[in-house]
Length: 177
Image (cartoon, one colour):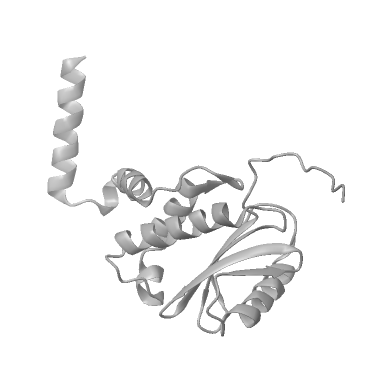
């Protein structure tokens, strides 16, 4: 009856995946060496997809890992943790990611819209999880931070009025110092 007590750890997330209808990778970020090569990662992703794409549940135990997932139109979202990880924490990450993307894509969470806004996806995942550590679970905060980071658009992609406004702001701040 004595089970060894595991040390608590902040490293709760092992991977975040987004797959399309066919089980092909659209986004994958692995936070440890469980699957060190791309070949092993793709095999794991195919295995997950085959086990989950026809079910309505939200959680699975697969290859000694806890997998929480959600599907929407033509996308499958997965958050993966170790087998002893708290499913509610993993589900909070999944819901935060999905709700953040839903707000950023104006409720149009589907493959084409996601591919057109990959930079927003990268920023959102980086705001939610860093190195396997959960940083944020509030979608409003994630969307706000992604919008702030998105304001730093390179000069070559700005309109003339945006460049002039930016120059005015910089001059104003340099005069106020």
